Length: 464
Image (cartoon, rainbow, N blue to C red; front, side):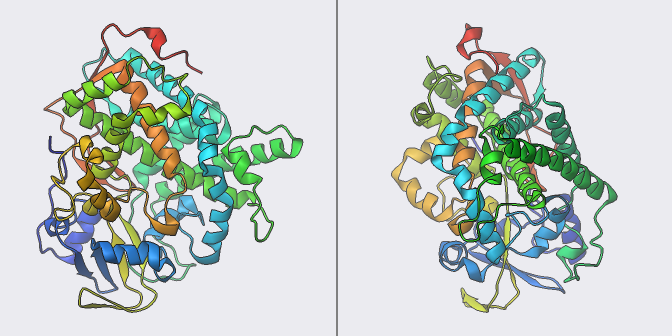
């Protein structure tokens, strides 16, 4: 089956038209040639940008000389009202210090410790979907967003999404997503920090509301830590980990910044990938049946963390969903020094765009690039494509610290839902991907859902 993608724009458009298209949707604002080009140059009156698909250049930017290509502030300008100076936006020593504190929380052992919380969230997702399974169509992105948020609340702050403040954060975050454009004035002009960025009033208000709620959660946890009664979850681990070089822990304001990016990176991206994985299985029923057969006899809420390694096809479906619909479609770096790439002079200050969306569907790097084929991950020929052209979590020193966490979470949630429910695609509701903060469907992902025949209610275990 061919996975849907948006129609590309005309090869040549005016700058004004490009900005209009980009603000509406990042993906359909790009020309079709980017799916086969090694590099493409875009010029504006204010700066030049280069979209790069060449594996050698990508390796230089991400792994070999990452200090020469820091995160660009142009994208950060649109995200800063919510994310502040989080690890997603910072560079240099500030970023290095943040990673020294954050990384220990996401070591493999810590992911294992969080596994029972993931299982509880998976059981809750099944319970929540069950009453709606008899409906004609169900909007799956809402289901996946709720499930991914539940994982974050349980693993980060040891509360289920039904907790009052957790539910309010979830609601506020969805309101912020709807108001948040990726572009503003600061993305195109080198403005001083004091000058207004032209953010919508709703964007500023929802960001401020979210940060107040996160501050409340963070301050409550700090009080629990001081009293010696804090649960040993991710928030406690991060808040009590000192920088090994300076001995200082995160301040409350710094922790609020990091929690904000955990919700964006850990909730929004996981929700996107899970929804697309369910759609792909709904559109490929024979693969869905094979996944369900793999899960036969397995209790999702009592299995051990090590049992995830048995779910090879389920994991590969999720990896294929991340290839076809990478949650973060583009990343932007800035060249600190001139370069010469593919006989082009790249000036200092140029924007370097790394696009997992185009890289993952590149016609020169993948066999059947638009095809949904989870079995490709078991074939030898895919290993080179994976090494050169697969980076749903970025790569190099700035690889997402929660990549292993996200893969475990996604595989588990997908397994829990497929074991209990059969999903069927509707030909009248083919989802068209679009990207703002992450890759979502333009009008949602609508699927028919029914309980799996002869499925015991006890097979999944009780909700926690």
